[in-house]
Amino acid sequence: MAEQITYSQAGVDIVEGARAVDAIKPLVRRTYRSEVVGDIGGFGGLFSIAAARDMEDPLLVSGTDGVGTKLKVAQMLGVHNTVGIDLVAMCVNDILATGAEPLFFLDYVAVGKLSSEAMAAIVEGIAEGCIMAGCSLIGGEMAEHPGVMDDNDYDLSGFCVGIVDRAKMLDPARVREGDVLIGLPSSGLHSNGYSLARKVAVEGKALEELSQPRDYLDGMSVLEALLQPTRIYVKPVRGVMEAVPGAVHALAHITGGGISENLNRALNDAVDAEVHLGSWDVPPIVQFVCDAANLSQGEALKTFNMGVGLVLVVDASRADAVCDALASLGEKPFVLGRVIEGDGKVVYR
Image (cartoon, rainbow, N blue to C red):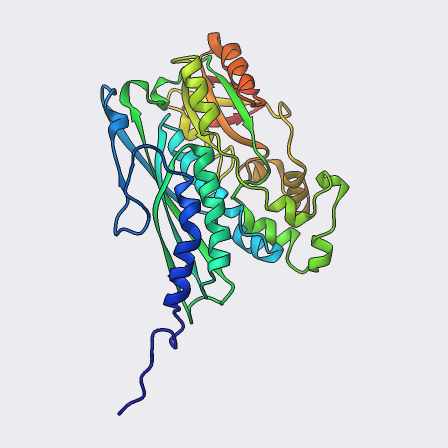
């Protein structure tokens, strides 16, 4: 008789997987909205669409994304309970560009070797991000990949579904000459440009050096500053849409490609976005990475968010009301430019 080789001997620990599910259950339940049906552990997550009941023409909006090589910074620092916030933020901020309310979220976590403790830390961040966005974590997958990934390596991806009434949807077609560009500050690099950031700020440097507090980074170390989670803008933007109805015409989430290649996605073919350089503060970590890479201004503007996490395109006559509403919701809005006649480009002054 040939010797039996079990799944565990092949590198997949089903028992540890069960422990991980038990560890994350209370974290997941913290995110539940009233529309959630059932509990974690089923073959599919169930969610009532009662939110569409009072809408004239409800549209479902979906988005999917990952965290990218920022995960390598988390692994170097040994901190895993914040990258889940990044994961949620990248998805919910994207669907927010339509004005959608995020309803539910699903995650996929791939690991080299499963650890219930490490998995709980990762899902803690995902759950926290869902709470910040007001959506429910209703399902996901934990996949162990022995022989494909290193034992301590992992990767994250996520998927979000939201809803918006077509009549209230934010749409580049509504943008017109004279509209005002209102920015909301980022918390740093967010989750983009990390292949470059790691190359110039991390590679070849000792962990001790990278872990030392730096005055030019407001007392944080390089690794801590790089690990600052992506901001989630759902509640202030949804709040201002309710407080000043119809004032926000379109919205751009400033992610990979920077301001240059994201703000244009909130424009139509009859206008340009004129961005006034110097009208906002660039976070220290962003300036540090740009300096370390010796980036030209043009290259920086199409690589990093440069301190601008989100841009709202707003009716000029109501821009002050929008700024006041955002400030009352805890934001620090700033005017970074205006909409001019053009053909769908971002230009700088």
